[in-house]
Length: 418
Image 1 (cartoon, rainbow, N blue to C red):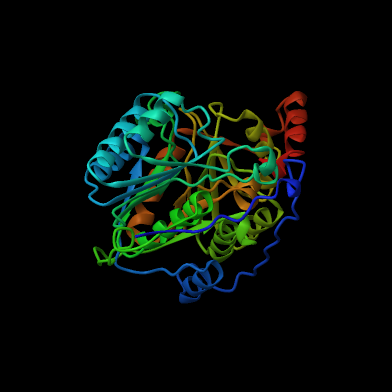
Image 2 (spheres, rainbow, N blue to C red):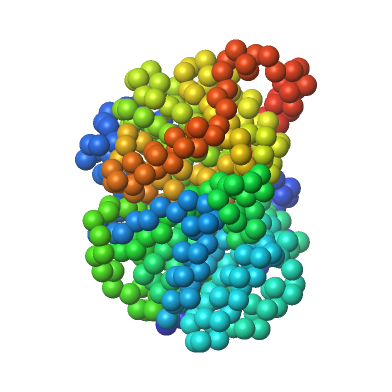
């Protein structure tokens, strides 16, 4: 069932300039009072993020395009009622065409296929591919397209990566639908990334995250069993979905990272494409080191799609290294994963980067899993990536050139928009 909501009238004269709007940063302070393995951690995570952690889920971690794309396409081809897809990046190319054909085939078969694409991230999609999707019955919406009367919200993007099939199977993580993610991070052109496939009660939370932006974009409320079927128990994994948006007035993503880091007692292993921590998260990481926590971070090395963001990230290296946080730059290809494993039991996999843009400006979504098996698998993947990374030490860091130092200081000036 679909209800159409009347969109709020637009008032062009109320558009605010400039596009880049400075907002007061959200400050989150928390003392270490309990560990990740304590019941208080789960209760706090639920209460402060608003997302419960139901049991009864099945979780499968997928590494790189060689595992991710076949699993997603299999789910799409098996759809019987609904397919909801929301992505920041959807580009032309081999995999883009493959997904388009799979979505179109299901739409022609009577499946309700609804797609949200970010108007900036997916701006490179060709008119021919857009026309192909639409003429085959795919319902396509663009998130915050540029209009002269919408300049004030143009900087607010959906960075979410979501695929929900029949309200029963969900995918989320860091990938985009583009040829950059093909393969197994086996060449410099094929990026390293992680996705999670999940079934069970928590898929309802993923569907709600998609619904959030479908309402904002189309004004349609999707209801009924086609979208929200009974959530059968299919496993014994405890999981939750965190959705974050600047329109909600707080950053659930930043809360997720803050609570997790401050609660750590043993280890924090972070892999992130754009690691530009703010003052609060730096202090939280430093506090973890003082408690004896092993903190290691894998970030992109030479291969990165945004060198300017890498410079801003490197601006913080000295302070982090001085406090005992170990930093590793991934060498084979672009490290695009957004994951964190804490104390061998708490895992987050999602779209959110470790930067101000994810904390304040973007719509994001993360899947959190409270399970030792998933954490062990993620730690194994982390150390495999670590073996393919180069550690940055203070001694090496002090030897960098003066030009590099100037680039870092200049990039840091733009940190609120990165």
